[in-house]
Length: 297
Ligand SMILES: *[C@@H]1O[C@H](CO)[C@@H](O)[C@H](O)[C@H]1NC(C)=O
Ligand SMILES: *[C@@H]1O[C@H](CO)[C@@H](O)[C@H](O)[C@H]1NC(C)=O
Ligand SMILES: *[C@@H]1O[C@H](CO)[C@@H](O)[C@H](O)[C@H]1NC(C)=O
Ligand SMILES: *[C@@H]1O[C@H](CO)[C@@H](O)[C@H](O)[C@H]1NC(C)=O
Ligand SMILES: *[C@@H]1O[C@H](CO)[C@@H](O)[C@H](O)[C@H]1NC(C)=O
Ligand SMILES: *[C@@H]1O[C@H](CO)[C@@H](O)[C@H](O)[C@H]1NC(C)=O
Ligand SMILES: *[C@@H]1O[C@H](CO)[C@@H](O)[C@H](O)[C@H]1NC(C)=O
Ligand SMILES: CC(=O)N[C@H]1CO[C@H](CO)[C@@H](O)[C@@H]1O
Image (tube, rainbow, N blue to C red; front, side, top):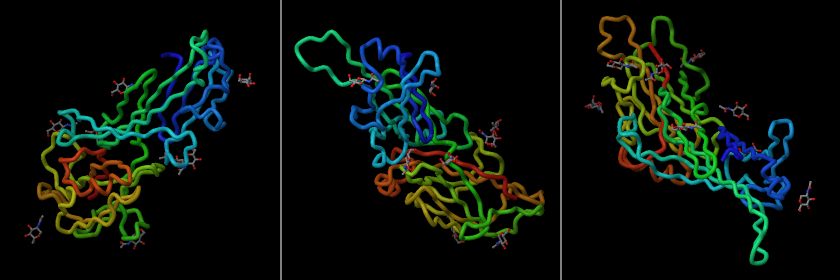
C-alpha cells in the first residue's frame, strides 16, 4: 500500500507511485496509465527522480468529467450520518471519485512470469457540510491508498446590500435599520461539476452552536418565512436569498441585536439537484453543509 500516495485536492487529485516497484515488475513509467488509457499521453504519469524514492507522478483534475480525458468515475453514494451530528435528521451523501492505474494486462498465453500492476485509489469527498463546524472531512480508501478531500474551502457565504449583489453589506456602527434588505449569497468556487442547493438557512443570536435552541428559520426547503425571498437555489454554483433585518427579542435590553446567519447546503449533481429540491428537508438523502456569516447587528 505504501507504494501509492494519494492526495485528494479540491481541484486536483495527485497520485505518486513508487518507480522502483514499477521497474522491478519489469515495466517502465510510460506503460502505466490512468483508467486503462495507455494511448492517451494525458493519462500517463511523469517520472520524478527528485524525490526519494523516485515516483511516477499522475494528476487527475476533479472537475467536469466530460473535459477529463482520463475520465474517472464519479459516484455519489448514500451514507448514514453520525446520529449525534448536526445532520442526524437526514441521510447524507458523499461523492466518491474512484479510479485505477495499471499496466496492460498480459493475457497472452496460458501462464506468465511477470506481474500485472494494479493500483486502485479513491478520493472521498463528503458533500454535506456544516461550515461552522470542524468535523467536516472524512475519507476512505477503497483499496490501496486512502485520503481525505474536502470542498469546504470552496464554499463561502457573503452578504450584500443590493439586489445585484454588487456591494458587500457594510454594517454601520449603530447597527442596520430594521427591515433593511439583506442579500445573502452562497457560492461554491471552482466546483463547476456541482450545483449548490440550500436546504435550510437560519439565524441565531450567538455564534452557531449545535446544542443551541434559539434558531430562526428563513426557510427549510420550500417552506419560506415571511419577508424572505429565495431567488436562486439549486440551479448553479451560486444560491441567493434575501431577508429583512430584524432583531432577536432576547436582546431587548441592548441597543443592537446580533444576527448570525447559517445555511445548510448540499452540493449535488445538476440532474439530481433539481429532483431533490422537491423533496422535503430531512427526508431525502443529501449532500449538505452549513455556512455561516455574522454577526450582523
Ligand atoms: C517503455 O516500454 C515501452 C514498451 O515496452 C517501449 O516502447 C518504450 O521505449 C519504453 N520507454 C522507455 C523510456 O524505456
Ligand atoms: C478541468 O481541470 C483542467 C485541469 O485543471 C482544466 O484545464 C480545465 O479547464 C478544467 N475544466 C473545467 C470545466 O473547469
Ligand atoms: C480520513 O477521515 C477519517 C474519518 O474522519 C479518519 O479516521 C482518517 O484518519 C482520515 N484519513 C486521513 C489520511 O486523514
Ligand atoms: C479557484 O481557482 C483559481 C484558479 O485555479 C484559484 O486561483 C483559486 O484559489 C481557486 N479558489 C478556491 C477557493 O479554491
Ligand atoms: C450599498 O452600498 C454602496 C457602497 O457602500 C452604497 O453606495 C449604496 O448606496 C448602498 N445601497 C443601498 C441600497 O443601501
Ligand atoms: C453551546 O451551548 C450550550 C448551552 O447553551 C453551552 O453549554 C455550550 O458551552 C455551548 N458550546 C459552545 C461550543 O459554545
Ligand atoms: C406571516 O405573516 C402573517 C401575517 O402577519 C402571519 O399570520 C403568519 O403566521 C406569518 N407566517 C410565518 C411563517 O411567520
Ligand atoms: C460549534 C462551532 O464550531 N462554532 C464555531 C463557529 O464559527 C465561529 C467563528 O468562525 C467559531 O468561533 C465557533 O467556535
